[in-house]
Image 1 (cartoon, rainbow, N blue to C red):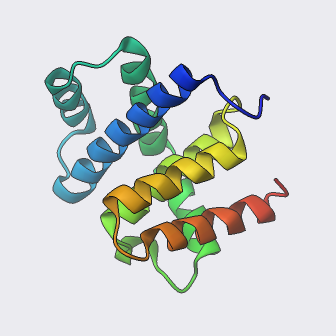
Image 2: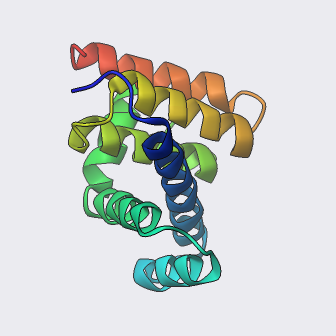
Length: 144
């Protein structure tokens, strides 16, 4: 596994994570069908195939593994029930944890740093610290 992705791939992945977050956030709050929400977001944005493909992989992977992802997040932050977390924070954590577990070409630091950046941009005042702490705990417990 490489420590750094090429700049173009890194930028595409950032766009894909942002799109995945927007889709998962909407699905989480509205309970609309994920395929419909994903298709609408992708239709509304002129994005390269690489961004669309990675965002689709993230969204589908998070939805498939949702119960296990939430269980892991809950175990890492037992004082904060997953269902009571801000929807933005909850979905940022889900995306990052999915990447940590399934995307072997994404360095651990990159997945965590990207999640923290998404939390800074979309979350509340303490979101980035919370996301960093939860993901750091998960990574340490996994010995990574």
